[in-house]
Length: 253
Ligand SMILES: C[S@@+](CC[C@H](N)C(=O)[O-])C[C@H]1O[C@@H](n2cnc3c(N)ncnc32)[C@H](O)[C@@H]1O
Image (cartoon, rainbow, N blue to C red):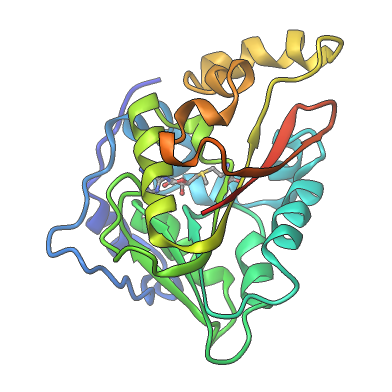
């Protein structure tokens, strides 16, 4: 797999007109560069302009998660709350309909912000949202958020941490915790350490290791490993799914 380094602004310009309407609220004067690990390992799923056309299919996203996409999406949405008053942060776009479902729970006067480093992904998300959805799209690197401390009531990291090298993962967790208000919560949904009997541990892990080189961290170590010291004793709930192949973690900030 060769690496590509597309000029992301040009990628946005080449998007169909509907996608190009995306308004990128970027408090950074200089747009964040595409992280090296995305160009190297995830160019074919996220960075390449055609990636969206290939992967933005519910059945494919569901297949990749072994039929558990809906269960994991619904677990994340339910954990965040029946309604999402105040400000909510989703760190990184995802394929599928997670964000429209979150947006539908945002009451009048409240807001959902979605951060992503790739304009092509933000453009794709904008096209999935209904006109006037209370969603702001922010082009930022999750490991260096240009957002004030204690801005959000809650935040979500959905299948993001396993794609990151350890230093980026640690910085992303630190930043997510920083921008959530004390008393708010951070919800993490990702891979976990499956039970010993799980067949996919022996069948799927070797494949995934080739495709996603940082993912093995998540199925060998607890997420606590990468939390800042200040929050290691703040994990208030841990739920395993599908023989603990996946997990949901809730951290009280
Ligand atoms: C949430 S993750 C994986 C989601 C899951 N595989 C899915 O789509 O259902 C994918 C997103 O993370 C974004 N991303 C990866 N590293 C990032 C970073 N450092 N800062 C912001 N966004 C990042 C990618 O651009 C991509 O849109």
